[in-house]
Length: 108
Figure 1 (cartoon, rainbow, N blue to C red):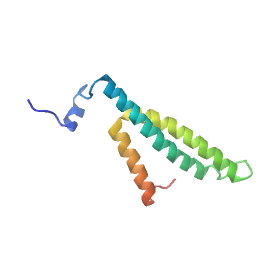
Figure 2: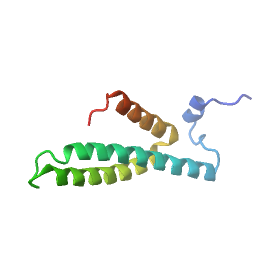
Figure 3: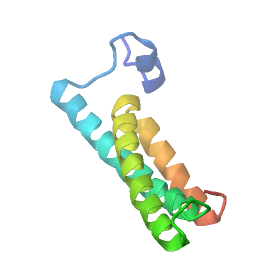
Figure 4: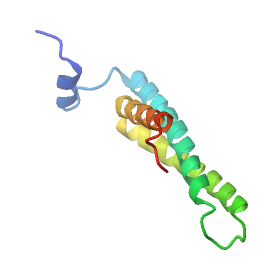
């Protein structure tokens, strides 16, 4: 009998997993990476759009609130999403977002 590769293991129902604690560790790591990446990009997007219009009278306070609020919402959504989708998907999305930010293709 041969060993299955990762693509074949993903196709087997219930075939994924290295034990309870290894899966729990992967879920925690995915949640941390997802929260960090989504929190940072949520703060960028909230800071950019926080001061556009609104009734504050000046944009600096609106941008500060948008940056903090966007960061917190991004952290919550990224943490939950990272725990749900798993390590591989979370890492690929976070890495793609950082690369997009570095090369200028990320537009908030």
